[in-house]
Length: 350
Length: 260
Image (tube, rainbow over all chains, first blue to last red; front, side, top):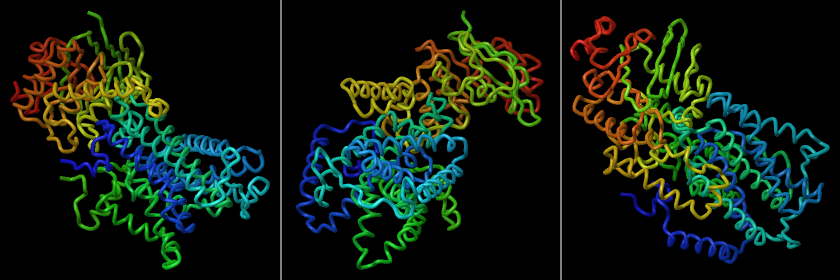
């Protein structure tokens, strides 16, 4: 039967985790929070880990929309950007304290996500991806062109640092503490949402909309909710990003960025929160760490990842930590097509 | 006895084909109604029209007096109609227990805030739902297959799983679309015996589409025979299957001949 180490892949999510397991996990998180800056003293390496933290909610957000609710969103960079700009502008122009700007960044992105979801629901799954790409492009054009608000291609420089009650996160170490706590809470919240009835309803929709409806699931509402929750997390990530990099410019939120975010969610594992963390780590930490020794890696990351994903689609369309064939229909049919082209049997066939 | 479901003058065309051509049907509270008819006679379309999966071109469906004709599928489900599907719609990426838990969607607190806060009482409620799901699995004879991936079940077992999932919605009216399709006679008899037992235990109203005539005669209190989108005969089981019009409708269908 299933080994306990594999339980992260989500073999059975109806069984409550034991108290001991929860305590061990909490202790590990606490040790990690304190120990990482002590072990990783090089600010550049710590910056990379901070980037992994920033990308984790993005990856989780994409996973909620794609891995759980089964809609392949290809415009997540726009919600990331929406959060980044909202946070930076509210703090700089409206004088919001950072944490208030951070919360608003999430809410604005969530609202944006819900609004984008509405036209998305009117189209079939493959066209949904196109609509999200289009939204990403529109977002880019708007922030690139709205000089008065966003300074266009020049971007907004000297975005203030993260500040909490007058305390400023001046160094990467300071940022680590704030980001690790916030991202820890986001991961915990996301895990609670997806492991209960809300996540189950999304997975019902992903696997069989008609059956979901027959069991009383309001599919339209649940899809909009998936976009709203997923984009809420993206917006939070945007705020962390803006105040860590201290520059928001349209270049950070291009189509390629959406692709990387989606690749994280898929590679790490669809419908798996640990998978999303793994995906963020693999796609950010490795190319960034090798940036100086193998600069091509980061330049060609989308291409390399694309190849990797094709390989993944052939043998494991649900990603590394995803379970069974828990993937959007669009990806499953892609997997079947690729396998047939190679003379292999589709994975679902016995 | 009170009428729980009433359909009047249901019409539905697909292209030039009239799948439903003025169907009238009433279901009494607590009865087991059998629906039979040759392939393409509109049985599944009738189920789809009742559950809102398709919208009829004309006609009216009422559930306990409420007009549900233009309601969406999920709202109709919430009013207490559960169904199974002719070609099985099981969530294969989930375990058996999770599949049955899906039936609890309408009862559970499915708000994001509720999931986040997990107030005291919630985990007790979740434990209760899980216990209930396991009970249901045992009731349909899947006691040995708890927490197994649904895709690892045999065909007959998935049929039972779908039944357990539908029962977990605690319906007032259950619609089964060919529950024994693909099963051999012995398996079919056992499954229909199970269906009758679970319905009796709950005093549940059942409408069942079934091709196996002797089994249907045994199970149902009344049989409706459909042909070409119309109700041909609505009578007691014995009278319905020996009606000359029914034999006429089936003429050329070997399955029916041998069945009789």
